[in-house]
Image (cartoon, rainbow, N blue to C red; front, top):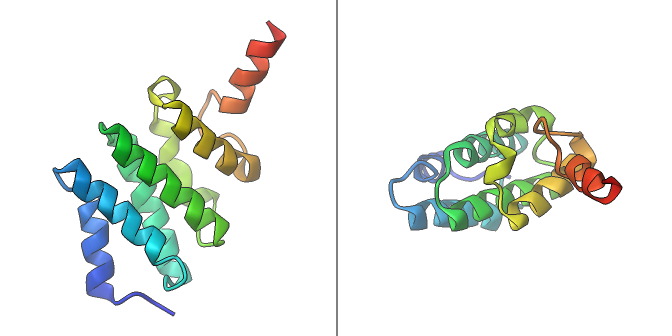
Length: 127
């Protein structure tokens, strides 16, 4: 199965839209398409979502980006290489919800950023 290319490209483009509501809706669109995405489209969407999350300034849009990434991962549509951009997100900018989503991905792929959430949590209990 595959999503029609023009619709897919439009959703990818909307991940960079100036309005955070549009970015949020683009993420929701990818979640809605989970069963229709081809493996190639899933990988492209994963890389685009990870890139979008790096520069995201809106908390709701970033939450939707992380949620969509987890949904793509659950559907076996992304791999670790598709998430490489996440390494550029400063850990300190993540909300608790973002960190929770990231922890699901890190359980499977290992640390995606230099200061992994699980390591930080373990240090907190150890100290």
